[in-house]
Image (cartoon, rainbow, N blue to C red; front, side, top):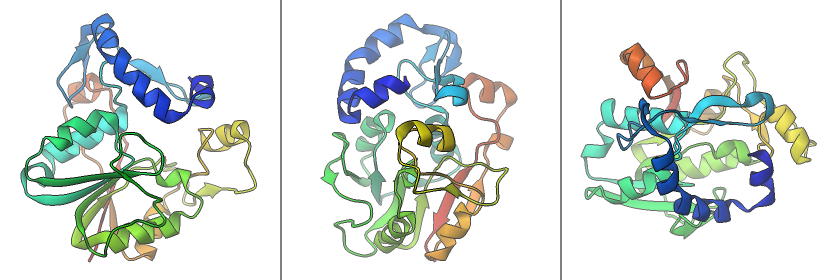
Length: 252
């Protein structure tokens, strides 16, 4: 997996995955694991990760969702009203699994942006967004900030374009056993970044001070744990990380 991601551009891999999804869905169909995003079930999920960070039953073969995608969907569906009300939404680096579902929400004014992804409608640098101030009610920016050296600037831009009272959901890789973020911009080689930060194109692993960074630019941030409100059988069937939290930030 690591070599594939390094040898081929991510936009190419996204396009190729669209071709193979129907075959994977057929090959792995079963009744052991379920993706709550579309309700499809499989005999197993696939491992995903890098080196010692490889996680079993992480990647749904038919939808290509990961644990964080399934967790986010359950939060949006069961623990928020975002899917049910008319709002303007900015989706940064839109995940393939969500794109078609979000486009179909008639009450959403839905805009996607990314610097490289072929899935995005607006090509933009997260540190210099081409939007006026206070445009969006909800911003989804998941597993993006760990790729950006000047993450504070990116957070400031997200804060700028979010409406007062609006919500930012910003999932990131986080070591909850550490109070401080691990980052070293002198580490530039892909293999060294993978060893230090868990993935070849990451520039940090956030610690619990991620929430301090969000609040430094003006957000009010909390860590939301929904697994306590799920049955143990659901956590297993949906293949969720039992203690993974969702960072949710609001603009006062």
